[in-house]
Length: 330
Image: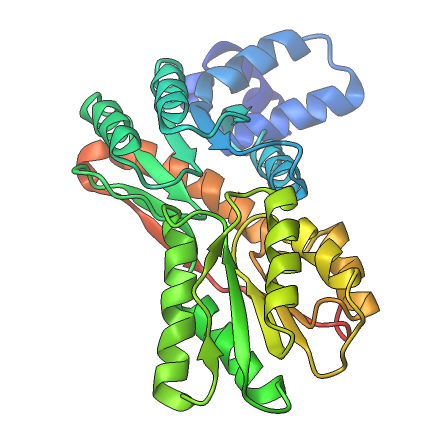
């Protein structure tokens, strides 16, 4: 750096581009420059500060703890790039609509833009409208959300997810038969779209499969285990199981307790330690997963973009490609 450039950063920071200020601060830190405090002040004054809030579900569930860490890392990676991210990450154990709405409104008091994972419900939609009316943009994360306001979305195309899972059953099952379907909660729009795409594929390409009515796990591993145990007992000729919602660890435990059949196809959702182990030991045939790091980066980028555009600009929607895993590519 030239002496004049450093002098202007110290005394006339507004005359120096932010990127140059950042470079000067990096050099000052490297050499232990005595005026580092003044340079830091000049750099911070030129940075944009984005106060972002994200509401996720239970931290005890591996998918959400992994997603929370990925979002935290994505926000940290932008520090020093001319903008500061103040991220408030909240995990909700109580998923009742009233509690979700209360936490969303409370978070809007301290944040410039919000993203949340939630089931569709009038109480949640009303809270989203109240937040948007105050000029704070909101985006649904993983599950699309709808309200009177124009809401953003960051996630994958769940209708395609359902059709892809159906395609896999069609190609991998040795002969047509009954397929059980698990969903977490019908109010999660992503899971409803999963099932819709799943059924549409079979209506179009192969009507010889029998799709059983979906069973709701209510995002509980214990409930999923009990449902799968009952399903296997009542339908001994079951061809496969599509686990499109929460509680997959319980479903996998039930499948492991049943004598393994080489012709049984099980397709689940998300890749984490438990589903990875199930792919390896053959309990799970295929997993369809969100691209975790890309999802985290796009969440932060979409919230920043929505904040800069303003709530009146309308919701920003980002549809990511999904990942497919089998025992052969993990």
